Length: 82
Image (cartoon, rainbow, N blue to C red; front, side, top):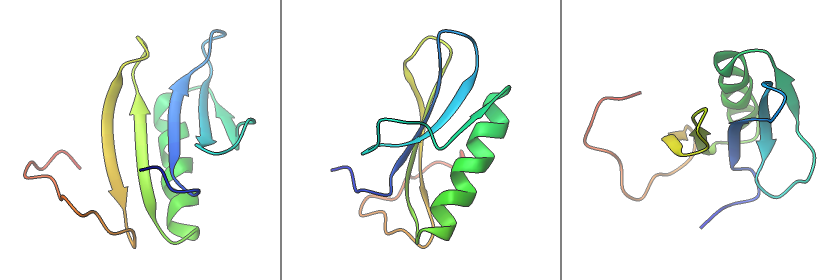
């Protein structure tokens, strides 16, 4: 279930990467690189008290999901991706 502070990073049609809250229509920030958008989204989530960060690849498919502290992940991953 998506919380109001959860964020998504994805690529727009013009090639820019977007950092956006899931419950908003407009982007919080727009970046030239996926890394820049992801870093900004992580900072935003940490400042907002944590939450879920979903990153989509160039093809629009979900590439990564990560819980940013102090968020609470009820099913923590068993891998060491992040």
